[in-house]
Length: 137
Image (cartoon, rainbow, N blue to C red; front, side, top):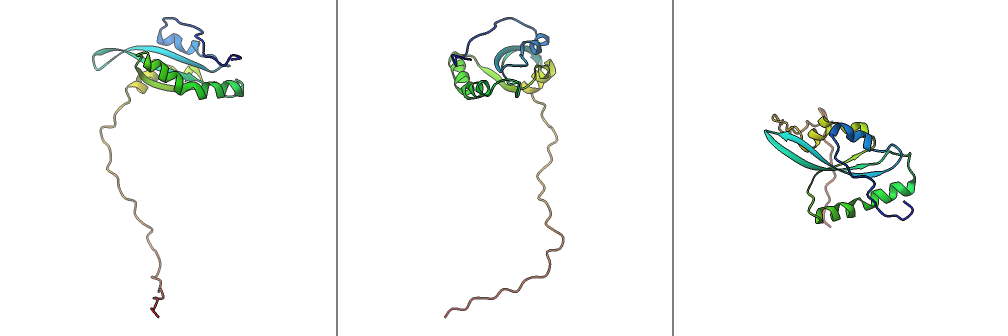
């Protein structure tokens, strides 16, 4: 943090159940996780970018550094050919469950979508007002 550079702190092959333990509760971090799962019969390896910000337990400088670098960091990663399936921002590692990641990558579609209904106006607008017409002089 003193150098204001992003360094790789850990690289490992982990399971989804181990992911919450990798998120520090006192420091901001960027995480790239390959989420291995099946969807509609296809086996997928989806790269998930996770930006963890533990709230106010880290310094203002650290929060500013991580939030201002996120766009450039993702741009560099994508130029390297990494296709990010989903970008997430979390404040607690406990949020990262297999169900949560699956629902974020493959959101459930609402099959019955109600049509937009224009709301009714107020029931009584009162008596009409008389307006004075302007006469030309």
